[in-house]
Image (cartoon, rainbow, N blue to C red; front, side, top):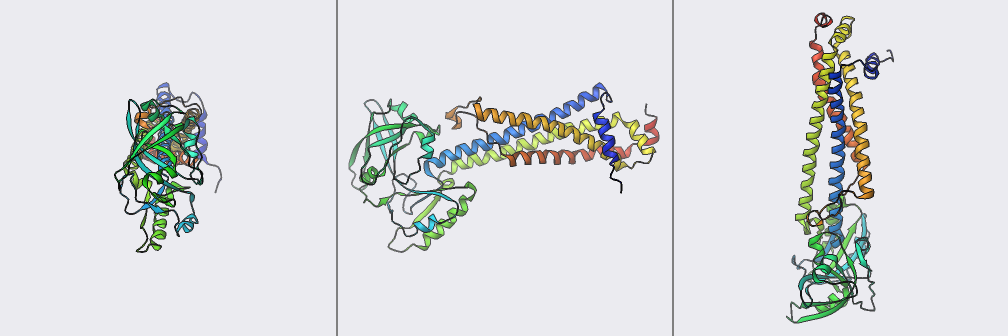
Length: 420
């Protein structure tokens, strides 16, 4: 078998030799190449922006409540919780699970912040010495974080920029809060000091949460020193959320007795289903966009290939006359189309990757935080996404080109040679 590929040789001579096509056909072919380039550019942007948007919003929601919360089964969906003991026999077994990043205790108490002119409802979230401050450190816009100690109660709190603007507060100002004990119906007042202000642009969370020492929440709820609202668990890979939640549920149930509180794990997707359902809908939008763009780019290439075939009917007739089979001639034009596709994909990748890198570095395109939860257009550029987009573009477009190339088999060499 000869190693020389005659079809590829002819295709390369046709493609790389200048001036072999008419101006009209060159315009059509250039438009087809532009269609491939622009289509891939838009697909890269669509995937990078949507996955980036989902990642950023998801991480912000998780930053307020971790991936999984372990709470008393009797606690309802409000922030008035039924306490559990911080000393649990199953804690070490859960810590030993693979994929866990951090486990921390928390406690919540709904209340009211009052100034001379305004009043605002908040949730005081108490954090302990094991609290992971990474998320709030990244979103801190003014002041500093506070430290928590087991021996000394800290009166500092962290509030959001939205609350600060609403109530006209700043770092160093006192924060007067009022709480109602559900059992005794006695109102309690606490004076805190604002040490820092954070901003995540996640409006419904920013206007709600005020972070404080967990000792204050215990005191407000009349709890013992070993009682908390529950535990928050962060995991390494979000895709493992359902499996780890299931494993934790089995562990806690295995330690359940009649005299112990029943503990239930709540995944963040279950706690805030409206947000995650909305994010999941974005995937459908991306698939629709990708499908439409590939179809348009494919039809552009189909029209370009038909122009190439019609332009070279005489050559096709000569090749058939000297003994070339239909499939061999079809391969020549598929090779030419492949060169055009790769040319378009090259420029599409250059444009798409460049845009993503520039946006990630400089954040040129902004968003309205009130509507989108983010202040800049996010991008999440991954190698696997680029490879899949390029492979899908090549595969689907080449499959579409098989249909117009079939027209070659219907060309009569005797008539084709006399075509001119």
